[in-house]
Length: 363
Image (cartoon, rainbow, N blue to C red):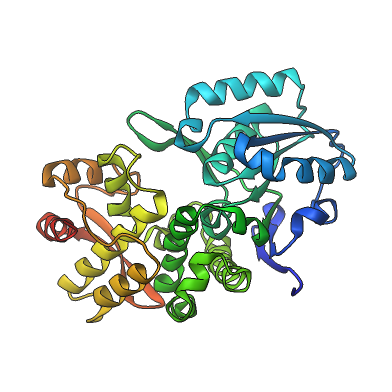
């Protein structure tokens, strides 16, 4: 087992390390930068993850000198609601969690988003440590400081940028994921290959079976490479005013698919996989992407067992959801398109007819 990789998100006084490796939870106290004067930690997790890793994390937090209070939240997107956030606030008040104390997010992207939002807004901001246990969270969601909760009108409409003190990505936890969750995480990981690091694509094309099975050597490299890309981009564009928009590759249509299927049919990474197929076809149609990108995208995703079609979308509903997208600008449709593996660009004023065409191709 190799030594953990330490990747820096360089945001001056708000900068932090993302530590990626096997067995980090067993040595949590050594890797955790505890805030000065912190006495208590609120450990936010769900019942499933708590049963697997809660005791190890509580032991590590206690070894770091913290009094630990566990807050169990619902599974899946149901946790990212105003009602669950309100309950969380009452629990923090009962501890009581002071301004110098720490919130610890243990779980997948949903837990990380909710716990990060609670930390961002409690006492106008307390420290949070992200301890992601899913592939999607390790490679993407836990890094970058985005936090949020959902409304009936859309995902993540209420949120804040709140950078963690540290991200501890123990890739050994990925072995306990259901296979579908690993596949979904790989959908998000593939994005990094198309926008910046094509070695990610090459590794997954060479060893798809090992990746889906949770081979720690493959997944640790995939996580490390994805985090390296995101850390570099976030360091230069914390609030998504420029290059950070490239991290939304596959997400514009992916979010549409999630919304129009009620957030129940597809995991986020599965919807992103479909969105990348649509984006590759759109890029080729507009003459922006190199020929063959869509075919390579489909072959790679199918090799990982991810969806590349089979979804029918109403054109009018697609246009309505895209227009509500937080990243839309003016009256034009904005997309992130891949020029060639390892290079992506932001394209404004994409013709609605072209979007309808590629969405129809997903059927």
